[in-house]
Amino acid sequence: MSELMTLVERYESSTPTIRRRGRTWYPEAFRMLSGMAQETGRTTAQAVAVFAITSANTQLLANIRYTEAILRGERTHGCYPVVQTPLVKGALSTTRPQRFVTGPKCSAFYKAIMGDTNALVLDRWAARAAGFDNGRGDISGPRRRVLDAAYREAAALCGETVRAFQAVVWIVVRESTPKSSGVIPRLADITS
Figure 1 (cartoon, rainbow, N blue to C red):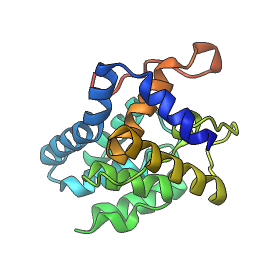
Figure 2: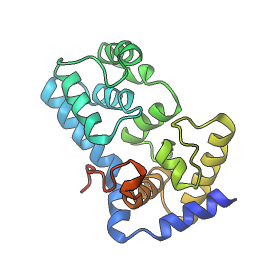
Figure 3: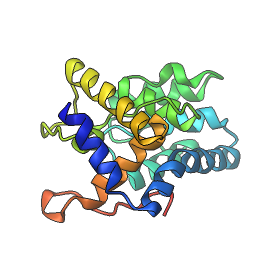
C-alpha cells in the first residue's frame, strides 16, 4: 500500500511539462529508433530490439550511441559483450527480433516502445519512484509483483496508461535526485 501512495504522490508532484514529456517519451523513442532504422536499412523492430537489449545498466545517451553504432555495423554490443553480442546478432538476423529481447525489464521496454501502453518497465529508477531502493539493479520476483500491482493501480487512479504513468514518475525521480547520490539529475532525454 505504501508503494501505491508514494507513486500517486510522485505523479501529483509532476508539472504539466513533465506529464507531457512522460506521455510522449515512448512515442518519441519509437520515432527516433524508426529514423535510425531507416537510415541503416534495418526494421524499426530490429532497432527497438537493439535499444532494449543494450539498455541494461546503461544511461540513455550511451544507449542511443550504442544502438546507432550497432545499427551501422560498428559494434556488436552495449556494455555487456558476452551476453549482448549473441542477442544483438540474433535480433538483427530475423524479422521477429523480440525473441532476442530477454529479461523482464528489457522485454517490457521493447513492448512499451513498440506501442504497448499496458507495458510496465520496472528498472531501478521505477523501483526508487515507488520508494524501494535496494542499491542494486535487480528487482526480485515478490518485489516485482508488488511494484507491478502498485504501478497499475496508481496509473488507473491518475487516469494514465501504465506506460505513460511509469514514464512520468521516472522523470520526476530522475530529475529530483541530488548529484551527491552519484547519478546525473536532469538526464537528457528524447522529449526535452
